[in-house]
Amino acid sequence: MSYICVGIMSIQTPPAEDATAETVDDHLSLSKDDLFHLLQNGRRRAVLRYFAVHPEQEEFNMRTVAEAIAAWENETSVEQLTSNQRQRVYIALYQSHLPKLDDYGVIEYNQSRGLIVPTPLTALFEPYLEAEFDAAPLDQRITVSDDRSSFGLSTVRSLLNR
Image (cartoon, rainbow, N blue to C red):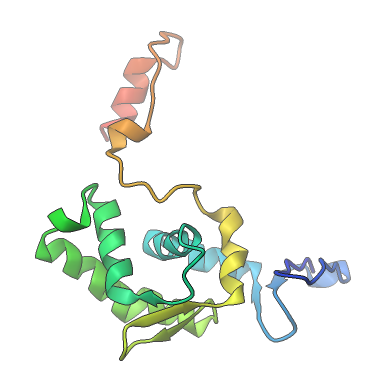
């Protein structure tokens, strides 16, 4: 079993027959299946990415996180979000994604107060997250050269327009 450790702990590699868990200490661990299950959803990844770009914060307001994710998903600013755009993300985070991350010990989520506190397990996800929490429009995030090779510009544009 491979262990990923956070802080001053060292990496440990126990016998190969149990090669499925990722851990921070003896009490907090995730199997690789659980880790990838949690990463399977884009909104959960966005929550974890939001934490990663705000490492100085120890506690997050759920509404602030939801608004940032809604703005990112809709390629707009928080100020320009519609009520429906905010509500779709807020409800999904409130009812599903944050409780699931809490159940697995990745965050401590106080639903009644709307507060989220990342746990040491949160750091396990950082290597699997995109480097940026970027609200730039899609056409500014993807660059395409004018190369007319067999996999040329028209092929890339047709893939992007799907």
